[in-house]
Image (cartoon, rainbow, N blue to C red; front, side, top):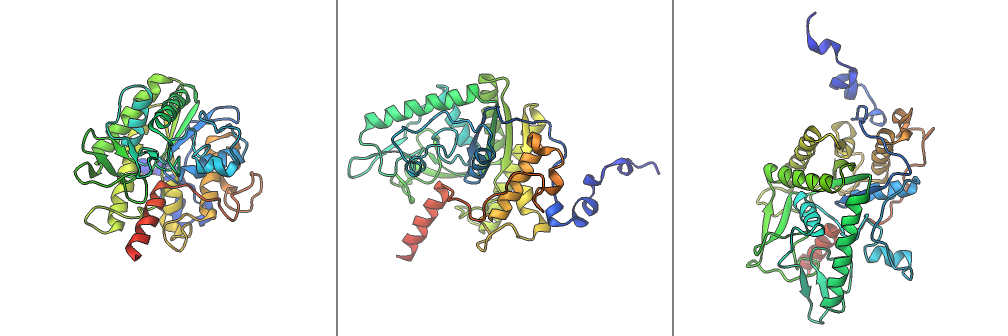
Length: 362
């Protein structure tokens, strides 16, 4: 029979690769082109789900690279409250590809936002691009600007000296400044710093072309600053908490995640130093039937996180030898899985919607 499909491996066929396998055996990866070791500098950024990767890297003894460290007098609880160590620098959640691009442009001197700081009635100053790093704000604009200058130096150092940069794409829905297109992690004034003003801020849902274009610009900028940098892209499996589009939130989620997945695929096809980790497919595939989501059908369970992280290390590190098939099952031959209770994830988006839900009840 002269048919090209006859020579394909089992992984190419749904029946053999999915239907005939148990949930614990499902693995949407083939052999990764990138492997990193415990001595390499591994940095990360992205949406809330990205924090699971940084925590797993630390827990397994890898060199999670942080260039913006906390003052020695802060306790571990205070460090987290002020945004230290959650990501490789103190930038908070980065949800969209435009947000990532603008952060890099600011760090390398190519963009200066026109509307970044907000002063509350008590005179405290907040950075609208990092609304949760100072829960009570800065005491003055001088302090805020000094902190920002130090932060951008840390971001630049991070990109110039890291070996691997992992970015988790989270959203396409964004809020931007009408003055100059500055993009914010959440809508100013909605559960966080700032005052919402429809004359100053606008909702914008990034298209496929925009999402892909901004991500390509970001990769070009990082690669120019650090030619040896390897980049791993992944898509958060967490659905949207709410949408500004005039359609059901399930449709809005499908659109957003589809666009992000396409953008990641385009980058892998376009750049030799870009790789993809299938966290989205691991958590949301039909075989799981929602087993890796909590009762709210949105929060990923500790078991789901453990499964995703075990596969991540199985494919991108030296732990890969023999670990893939066992990574969710009996625990043999692999490092400890995630604890039964996950630590609190710091998420600008969730803080926003908690405040919104409270206001709607009042």
